[in-house]
Image: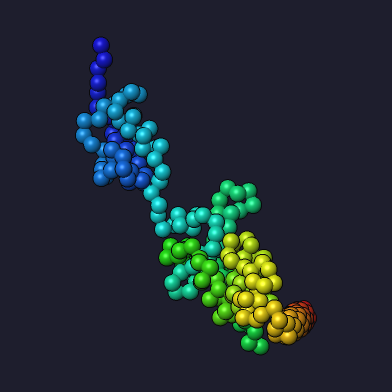
Length: 237
Ligand SMILES: [Zn+2]
């Protein structure tokens, strides 16, 4: 003979907690916020079965969980960009935001950085489209993924680089004819092509020079800081 007895307060309490934190959409628990009356106790009771079934359901998505979104590039309508990466072990993800800094000399540099509010940004974001990547490239003259200057005329026209296009599955012309078609030059218009190549080399040189200037400015700042630091210490001693 089997006797049934009601579920314990501990069991009904656990069921209520699980109903709050699990995604019950499409299950028999949908719409319930507390444990229903009449559940039976014991190992084979209906309360125990409900607990097992509820534990098997995924947790409800919350705003905070959006930080653990699938790896990839995300954009917001406000023009913010977030990159969700997997950690080295591949056990979890973390988000970095595209951040710009302007030096005293007015040079703007971009980096993918940890930034406060990245999770909030991600909550309002959607997977970045190739159009958004291209618009950023056209506006700032750099590839949004690797942040390198778009010196190649084809890359500058598209708004992103060839290597990153390969990684992201974005279109990039693979033949000389396709590249020329994109740039609006024809096979017999080779002079235009050569001019574009020359412009690309000049832009690369300009970029290398700008990088050298930036490195020198940084070295001067480092030296100045070190000098002041020593000077300050000498005075204190
Ligand atoms: Zn790139």
